[in-house]
Image (cartoon, rainbow, N blue to C red; front, side):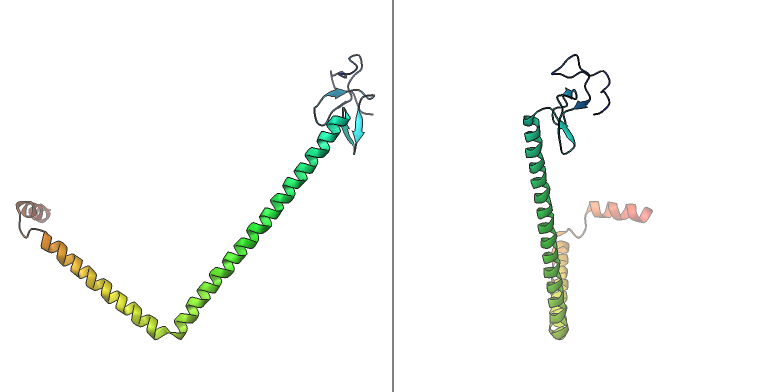
Length: 144
């Protein structure tokens, strides 16, 4: 069958050297106790059944992983298609309504600049025109 496992004896026959280990529980086995299934050593039908059940579970998990990976890929492709459609829609709208869009942008820019100037004036109005602190700071700047 196979060479002896160095220093191990069969757990069922303590006077017989072990030649294999069970693939599930790693129990050392002699040539008489080994049950081979699909070229893999097992100590009992229970271990063989556990290996089959576990193997089926692993196959199911692998199949589920592949299914999830496919779904994630499809979702990404759909998102990219939606984004591309939105970009194209914006480009199409801009090219067919360029004067309207440019007018709206110009109006928004002037409104923003107007609000900025109003805010600046409001801040300047709230600051004292002349103070000892201001004179001291101006003096320090001028000295450097």
